[in-house]
Image 1 (cartoon, rainbow, N blue to C red):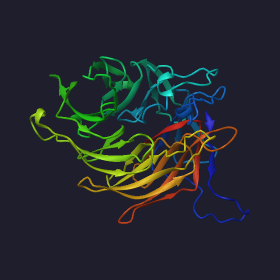
Image 2 (cartoon, helix red, strand yellow):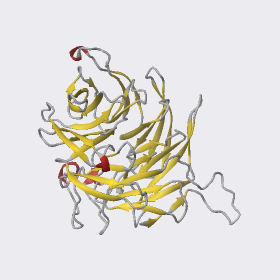
Image 3 (cartoon, rainbow, N blue to C red):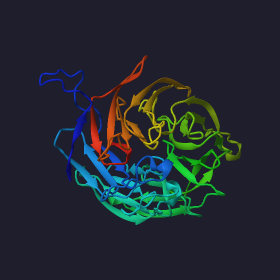
Image 4 (cartoon, rainbow, N blue to C red):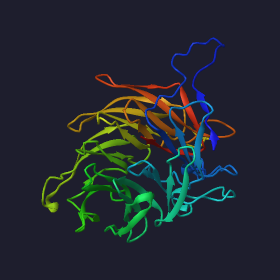
Length: 421
């Protein structure tokens, strides 16, 4: 166990300085879980130079809330990877267990350069089931789950996982008492030279959305149940919605009426958040047409977004040019704030710059009053730790974000943050 350290984004002018805001972190949740990739610098995705630090390994870290200086945090050396999107961890319905995917394996300390980190990192193959009932003492056990598992989502007692393993592109796990799977069903998807890179449950539990990055499609699959009423398999439902660029992570709105997905385009121009409307009402799956009904531009490299619990706001983490090698020209990362109407219309409110590198994950708290965003590292020479920064949300007719004064110092490579409600 480690001691929690917090740093403050303020200048201490004197011992009697008056703070413009409280040097505390406001975030309504039981805790925050983060994943950190110790294998490479953020810029490795551009130049292949890992810039590894000897002894620094992947980590799962839990920060109990409310935060206090000197309190214990929970930590476990759970292998994980920043390659892929941020749907690499999900919680069981009772929030006692976290299921963490080993999307890629860890590299040796001697590794220096890879030609392409997306393809040349060691293969991942495991699912880590982490008991987080005691937030300061997480304990993990692993189970083989297939080649390079990419995304996981859990609803009720059912987990769905996509991977790069041929014939087992989708996997259904039924979660039993004690957090362990009691049923493991491999489901092939009819994909040719393509991968199911993201998966998400519809809130009502009768559909899942699957993203296929190479074909730029979002498919809807309907649950098929066995005579005992348990999920047996999934069947394609209707024609897929199609994006114009590179689809990333997606999520249903809380009411299930719309599906939002990040479109990263070519990686150099502005990303978009697209709104997909699925036709789930027809009885004939062949007649169901799904379509994109709107898009709004955000920053470059929008790898993560979060929808507020009331469905009215969306926040987006934009890497922009922050992950470029330091020998070149870098730019500031940002967070975009959007509004989302009940009819599915998106509109951008504002962009907010942040100083850290590669914000790859962002999440609202359980009331929608605050936002947490991961930072892979900072523009610091020497020890290059990551961090988690926070914004206060102003709701209503004139929504806005206000950066909180304090942040959490996290292990290097912090790429995923999740709320423990």
